[in-house]
Length: 492
RNA sequence: GGCGGCAUAGCCAAGUGGCUAAGGCGGAGGUCUGCAAAACCUCUAUUCCCCAGUUCGAAUCUGGGUGCCGCCUCCA
Image 1: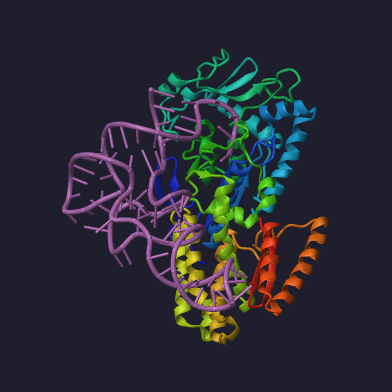
Image 2: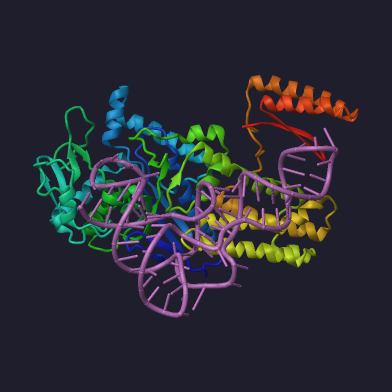
């Protein structure tokens, strides 16, 4: 693919769509705020992971070399508290949930980042940065802790568009007399008894919340890297503070060229979050739904829109995903994937090839316009609609028609499977993935019933046949008579 | 109180100055089928929360209003 196409990104910093110009031509550096691993990953975490996975694959498709860094904030109050409850070492708890997070994302088809830096492994870099900030007068030590001096950074508030005075007015921050100013935030927190701590020039303690992302992103991606991502809920104070620290430290702006924030996942119109307790884990969802379907559901929404998560919501979306995949799977059986050029050589209908190229164009244009995955997905539906007529008579299709289907298949694989990851070769029918010892018996019995039913149908005893089918339906087993034979599946 | 976002058909959801307002689900009719299911075809918003304005022209821009959400405290 070429890098000719212009890519537009909505930049939170400017609140405008801007043309993407990388720091280095042909390369993209991306830092995505990862999780604080003190519990299982939920769907609210899956959304940014899936989105940035798609974004990365799209950039790659456009010819960029992509470097993706995602941190684990493995030192945090929440981790310490949870570990204490369970009588565990905080770092051990964090390691456990970090692993669980990665495994959950693997299952969702999220490609691993290039680096997963952990706070606990970057204490030195963090201390070095804090020292630098103190030397520049942007931070000060107080009672064993170190705070960032917000007054030393005149542009404070530029990301979240807040004025310092206003922040002060509405502050619900408890007064900490160690701070010079209410808005100042901790870079280094003095250790309280019984807390994990690391030695530092200011005594034993641990990093404050925001400093790790600055230290680690600068370390792995350098100054003025391209894209920093995360949930909308991180804009303030987290990302605001990152900008202040980083730009004060390096003396260079911008710290980040494009800020991308994804919308939140809601349940009952309320933000899904661990602290509210209204979350559904990725594992729980994957027990009922196929990973490519979860991606489909996420990508059906524009990344900046809120996404309501509910079972009813998913159920109605499932049909579309099934239809897309059924068509895809039919195509797989008809032809190997072919380039448009090869398909044309083999006599593919021009009309079909035009549809294939049109889909590709529409898809890439949608993605290049602020990663409009919903529109991109729509283009795939249009493609299968255009291919459908050729699929109908596939058994008698000419070599040229099959080649045309192969060209469409190649595009589906590259865009739908490769970039979006919403296609699968697995059975997409209801409950198809069910297994287990008891099902072994059930399967045998269903086969037996269907054998009897087949005999009834052969004898034109449709009353018996229909009775068996409806009784099975009541038990949650769907029977379909297709031209090629009867098939059945569990209803979800 | 401050900042930001959202409001498009029964539902989900694109579109942000101008060809017929994407796509999916659902619904209606049809093809196929012993009947169903699946699949396919056709139809399904003269109109984009309300009011005023800018413009030859607005769902799209401006002002005002209403409702909802997020952030200002840990948070993807």
